[in-house]
Length: 278
Image 1 (cartoon, rainbow, N blue to C red):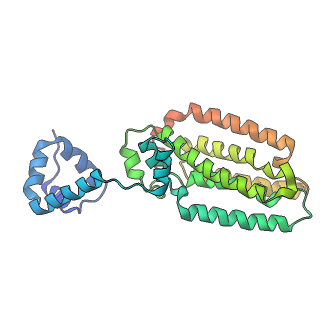
Image 2 (cartoon, rainbow, N blue to C red):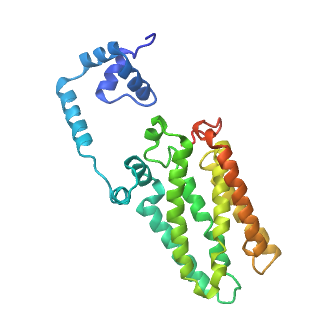
Image 3 (cartoon, one colour):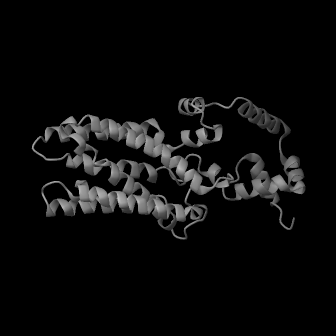
């Protein structure tokens, strides 16, 4: 070893007062350096150390699973994958409750506008919800397991796909239930599905370049701007919800999915201007 943790930092580490990123550096170094471990042992209160080991043993011996995690394990999902899925921020009750409330209000407004040819308000909003879920699933500001995922030997693309599948299952499932509340529009009420897939895959493909929040935000903003322009130009069914628009959305989704696959290794790197990807 050519570098050792300073004694003052070791004492702060022992008291639990050492702040990141020095805490992470000291943690890694002490695990490999016998000299620094000896120094840590000499400055640590034996009673506090024993109490800490007892708490650690209790956590390791009796890990607590939440309801979602337990259900996932019961249906055959691997333990580590179930934990990553259960920790997805947008699967929290607060997020799901907000999405349900928004969809309910949108359906009520749409049903009250009986003179429209298609549920434009609902079709414009529904594709944004999965995209917003993806944006809120990653990064230190939103992910409670951010530090764990950064140091875990896990491919960033795999984590992205695990979280994205969870977001899409929840978001598309709720959108699908809301669609059933619009029976008067028939198959036209399903015209949100392909745009939703196109927006989500495009946002994911831009993450390596723009970051996990800015990329979906720009895609979502572009979608809203496009709908406003299309509405001003044509008062009937908006272009994205026509047969031609649906074909374009399917093509965009396919191209973005291919680009996402080609860029999969870049999810383990850090964009210069926008911070870490996961």
